[in-house]
Length: 437
Image 1 (cartoon, helix red, strand yellow):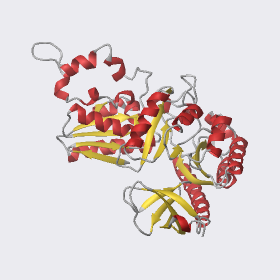
Image 2 (cartoon, rainbow, N blue to C red):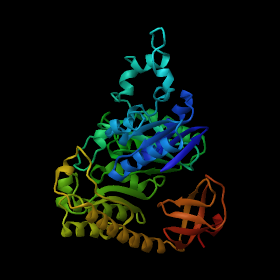
Image 3 (cartoon, rainbow, N blue to C red):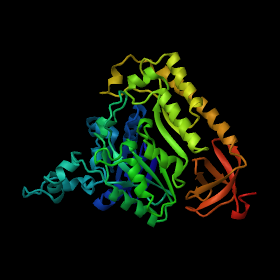
Image 4 (cartoon, rainbow, N blue to C red):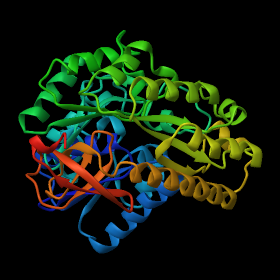
């Protein structure tokens, strides 16, 4: 969760990197609307826990700032609109979260005494704006995070056109829709102009970029590389959507960071079938072996779900073994929780306690794998992007680094990795002439 405070206008982002990027559009829209004493919760619904956190945050805000207007947007708001409205919150759809009209003061939304519509009311009910505010539009405008981070998150796609049985994303964000390449390039140039030297492309189903406009993620990446961009990183990718063009970019283009995060979800073929995933275990293993052979040192991350309905001990053992088989060092692991309206919620459940226990086991195995990998980094050199605090950063392979001496925020410097400190590496800045030493 991250928070951006502007005067008495507060935007609280839950969940994914796309929400972080879209949160900047929300912040700008709230400020432009002239809202005062307003709290916007940009919610997530990937798990029951994420929705619970949003509800809890709304209750706390109503209690601690009774005079503030509370607005809820994001995926949880889409799925539980009535529940949040009953809590006294204004609910804004995902597709309208970046629009100024969504945050106009409540007093401007009602008709004038003479019976005519207020300016805001006219906008909300107009044929042009009404569909946009109801989320009926197919246009996606790129979402760019703020200048307060060394790296820029750039959302280029929303929605999903797949039908994974566990996922409520399509219910919350609709089918897959992409921004235009020209619009993405313009947003990326904004980030570069303000001095951000790394861009992270993100989306609900990033690998499907362009499916709705006869282009592809590889074409977008190639277009971005025509800009004076120093570092480009891709967020989570479906393994079955990495075609040869994208594979070549991931393994041959130096400006694309050697760090691939895959939406694997499970390591057992029966569970993958019941999830309606489009790859099988052998496909994931084969892909990662190809990636590591073509670009030695590439770091692998993965999303994994523990305790999916019908998962027995043998099936879980296959997912556990996947961590070593695929050399997963950055695991995003969480227990399955049923989402209302999804097919998996109607399948035989294994129970939340078992799901949590299995998730903990996966996390422990992933932590051991990551620690061994980090220990092997000691003595190596790396290039890191220094965060705004001047004391931390990330290497090309996404190793988190703590510096022994401060460096200029937002710069890219060479360091020598000294030793592991928890899940981070301690590193010292080095002069260019010492790199080969």
